[in-house]
Image (cartoon, rainbow, N blue to C red; front, side, top):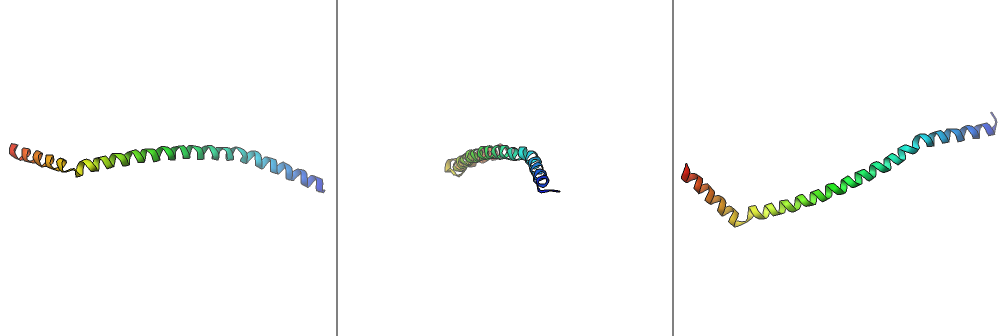
Length: 80
């Protein structure tokens, strides 16, 4: 084989590899964009849930909440 044939074969092989790998590279970018969007969505959902949990903790630790619970328990004891 002469040098020209080797170069032509190398170029053809390189072109085939690029054609095969080309769409996969674009697909990875699309997947990473989708994952980034999902990540942001989940982070905002976690932030919302943390705020709700903080509110619930404030309600549960409030003295009035405990007092109302105790009154409810006394009412249940009177009925029974």
